[in-house]
Image 1 (cartoon, rainbow, N blue to C red):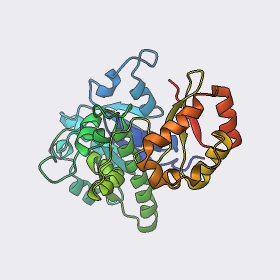
Image 2: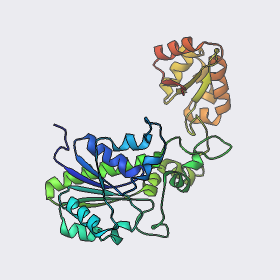
Image 3: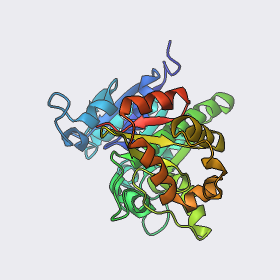
Amino acid sequence: MLPLEGLTVIAVEQAVAAPFCTSRLADAGATVYKVERPEGDFARGYDAAAKGQSSYFVWLNRGKKSVVIDLATDDGRKTLERLIAGADVLVQNLKPGSMDKLGFTRERLRKDYPGLIICTISGYGDDGPYAERKAYDLLIQAESGLASITGGPETPARVGLSIVDIATGATAHAAILEALIGRGKTGQGADIRISMFDVMADWLTVPLLNAENGQPPKRMGLAHTSIAPYGVFRSKDGRDILISIQSEREWKKLCAEVLNMPDLPNDPRFASMVERVKNRKLTDDTVAGVFATMSRDDLIKRLNDSDIAFAEVNT
């Protein structure tokens, strides 16, 4: 038996963030009714990569029951009301204010269904000048500052998938699970409000603290602002290998067992992470010079034997 079997979730959802959340609830055994407008969730048209269907839609809506409801009609609203009356959880990410205009205010639902867990996902939260804005993944990547620290030195870049949507959906999923535990203790539901911008603001705490300390993060491509060596180095046969040296112990092992330079950590320029970051070009050039003399297979054997974290850059 799956842990959420017997729970009913009503998902008035579209796009990615809310469907990510409810797909995880469905995976855990909940019965999820996905409410779609007559023309369907617009995510159905994102692409046709999954045997003619949208890859995002197939990924995020597996295991759900689709219910077509025209919420612009009285009959449609009555149908949604009946669904909510028998539900444990309601998740929605329509444009801010849409559910209120349809008569499904959180205040009314909490009064009529005190055990209901309501999760509302928005772009910018309930208050402030941006509250009623529509929001999509890339817009929040830009607005939150995520794009400003992503990519190479030349220009900001988009993270290569819908990271804001996925992070928001994961946050909503965790909050709903917490609320279910709470309801088991008190019998009371919850009013959960998740903002895409707030989720990214939380995720960007480390860059923010560095900026407030006078060290705003730079776009580094496949490198790290505060760790060195950490990045891509090319083997003699042209293969790109990414290494990540997180500690002085790992640095000493890399120098002794991979680079064959056991005395390098004694050089003041390389004696600590702070010094290696300060002398990043020299650090990287030193590692790159040795990597360029060895084949991919030789490097991987040495890295494995030395228990050094690495990855190949694949497509």
